[in-house]
Image (cartoon, rainbow, N blue to C red):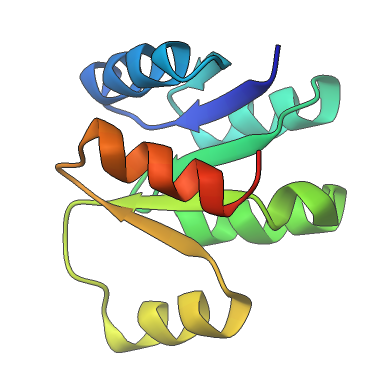
Length: 120
């Protein structure tokens, strides 16, 4: 079964994503901070990463950069989660690196569509 890594400091968000992932036929791991997520990336094989933009200690874009150093293929399957509008700098980085963005609140169909676009 394909596995998705979910990184968000809000447990209710990780629970929702886990529920949606299971309905789509994926298993999922949740991490509530960037450092533990990066350790999981080293130890596990994931087909996609869904990561909150604003986390304590490290941003979602910093996690993306670190994952890109560890696993370029997985970095291509990175989805940034955010509940706010992106500032100009973040927007430029997302566009330049072709990172998918899923706006909170999100719905099952939105998540399904993004995972399909990434062909995971």
